[in-house]
Image (cartoon, rainbow, N blue to C red):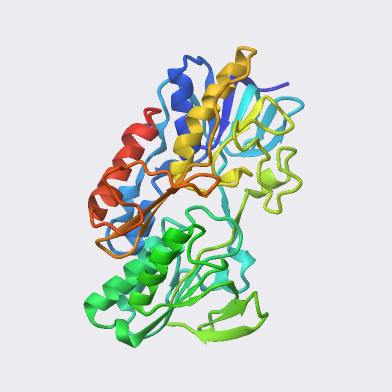
Length: 399
């Protein structure tokens, strides 16, 4: 028997979970509970700017209690198992939570140990990552200290959140080094697993020019297969040729491989065809493929969109519409088209705004911006506009 029962239980207090909770309360769903162990909520896109010296880490954090919508029951615990046949969630504290409908917004796991040597290297010796709150300030410290040598910027081969972030920090760092007059002494190397700089040609072509302008050595179809922090080297493997090269580094920004949280991988909700353990949902309705009382959104799902906060902003209203309809015994009309947005900072003053859907159609939301070119209103949008949209509209179910 469950220790407590709720109409809707949400797993995860990130952008997906909070946005859905807010919209469910607006839809007059009386009994909503949210399972989340953390004390703080983070606006993670700001960490790129922290690593690039353009923002401070504390500006990305707010108390979790301040963002959970009024009337939502906060279960300050971590989910560890789901029994969809029994309609229950088990927590790390030993509680069993019953539900009528379940929303999984559990986020994504950073798999540091998937690259040999990375756990030992991270956070010291010039190695850092903007994918963690405590490490992003170290990235900026490393940028400031680097005056010469090889600077590595790495992206892993599997799906990751904010896939543009590994490139963003490269451009921010190179722009700073150029301003300081040391870029000529630094050899930036960008290691990308993809055959192009971006999956859509119009933006890939722009980024090729941006990288060339900084003198970045772009290694396409390549991965870092190993790090040796004692020697200060990375092994770069070209997946096309099979050849590997060992390169010394003075600076390395590492993006860890990512996957669904381990407990979710091992749950009945995980898609058996997903090598990363993601929750199997219909890519348009966000309803589980096997269990109709379960919905999911965000980074932990099999939806083949770019894993971004902007995607969640479009997924949340679709999920809530379809979930509420199911509670009333009908079928919701909500349909998610794969929209994602990736604002790629190409310097400390410019950015490229990439918005697209499942079919790689361009989906511009700012008609005054020519999205096929860099634009200079970067500071207003990236540092002011998007955070304001996040905190004051998206998390409150208003956007």
